[in-house]
Amino acid sequence: MIYKRSSALFLEAEKVIPGGVNSPVRAFKGVGGTPIFVKKAKGAYLYDEDGNRLVDYINSWGPMILGHAYEPVVNAVTEKAKKGTSFGMPTEIETQIAQLAVSMVPNIDKIRFVNSGTEACMSAIRLARGFTGRDKIIKFAGCYHGHSDSFLIQAGSGASTFGTPNSPGVTKGTAKDTLLARYNDIDNVKALINANKNEIACVIIEPVAGNMGCIPPKNNFLKALKTLCEANNILLVFDEVMTGFRLAKGGAQELYNIDADIVCFGKVIGGGLPVGAFAARNEIMNHLAPLGPVYQAGTLSGNPLAMAAGLAMLNALNDDNEVFNRLADKTEYLHKGITKVLSKNKITHTINRVGSMISVHFDEAEVVDFETAAKGNNETFKKFFHGMLNEGVYIAPSSFETWFITDALSYEDLDFTISAVDSVAKNLL
Ligand code: PMP
Image (tube, rainbow, N blue to C red; front, side, top):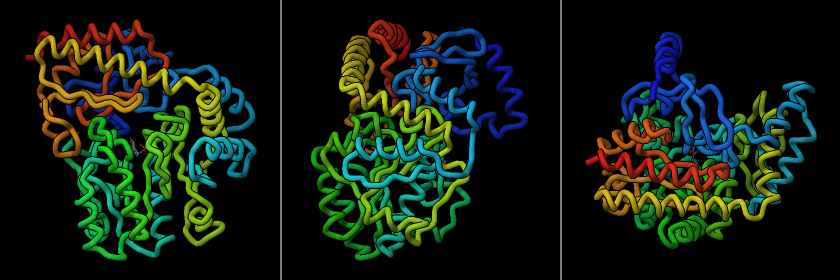
């Protein structure tokens, strides 16, 4: 494939934007080469500036669960825009999307909308600290909760790809309040809690990790975590920025039948516009300004265009009782197909999958935490990534990322992808 115009655009971008991108994972630093510039997208396909068509497995890192330029979302946003794009005053649509979200997600009474997943997680831990009167939090190595200071401690996603899981600029004072645990290791969490009795406000976790590739919680890990938190008056925060409105209507809480105390959202909830949210039961949410003392605010929070996109998206997901099964079936089909062709070509690999989240690790050991995720063969991944790109399939340019399956993918697209893996696998060894 030819990427002449993308390469030229990237050279121009680099002159005025650091690294040529507005979010590091978009750069091809982890895999080499220059990023693809997108001209437009529709359904399951991206069309780049050179006229190439790519089957998209990133889907804006999750939001486009029903495909690009999904008509109900496009129409809702277009209609709203004609009536004004921001007021900084309440609008009815904010209540409508809040009512719908509260009806779909278990164990939440109120929800506050923000502008990104970062803001959602940052605000959630402030609320947890304000509610409990404690300072420390526990996070898991390899989990990513956005780029606010408290979370850039052994962070996953781009931070791991670029070898900066602990970013300069985060003060020692902030870092000391973030305790680090091993994913899927309940004894490790127990030990941390015992060593910091009555000091921990919350444990924040991606209930299905998606930022060190996809890593499912082991049997009963989330249940044990919930029990442990309850016994120690620690709030359990589910970061459902990836899993929310993706794994089920009620996200991972519904899938694993576990009530979290605070839940964070992003991606799907905004239908592709910049939206995040955090939610909890009344007892906790009423601590938030203007009802309570924990401050949190936003000029563009609840923005009408963003709310219109989010409402159209949530309505579509709420009205379709089969959508999550369809997504899981497609992902399973892809999983089986890729396993078959990689095995046939004798490529060492492990595939992890939950619902419509899937990732391919080039290592044979089970991938259960950051340490095992980091053992994957990155040289093989690089070749795999560029091979797939050449075949017209776009996966995330990092082995620490998850593929997000969209309902717009047809079984023909999946077969096309599996054939592409077969062709690429022949040259991987
Ligand atoms: N939490 C999780 C689990 C995420 O995957 C992400 C982004 N990938 C974030 C938080 C941060 O969201 P945003 O990029 O919208 O700030």
